[in-house]
Image 1 (cartoon, rainbow, N blue to C red):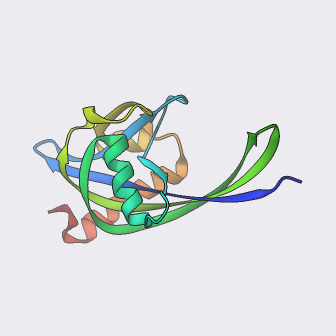
Image 2: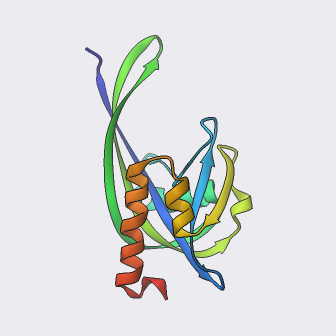
Image 3: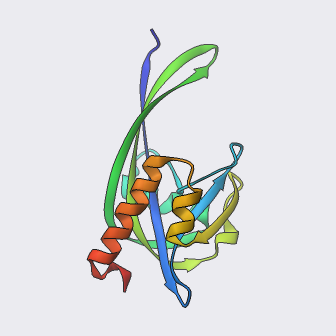
Length: 149
């Protein structure tokens, strides 16, 4: 039986509205080459909110303001560390974020591409069902509040 380690990450559904309508930021991660929401590990002493804003800035190249928590997802996976199999219990906290500034072309080197996608494009392109569900919940929050203004 392998040892289980806990990991906590945070990320966001960053959105903006322009003349073409509502868009959300998605990223094509290396080396897997799969589309996902920007997210990452919390740095020591960092809150989930701080980490989510930082990760969206690093991976998607944009500065955002945090609007509201969306959901937390949990999953388990195994990885090989120093020849030993380790079971990981991961929790990812997602937040709704409104775009302030920046350019998706300014993403970091973990990312092959960052782009603004329509909600339908994002729901089609995102690799993980749980992240598609997070986007749907975020979109509901935009339409239920003044967050979309």
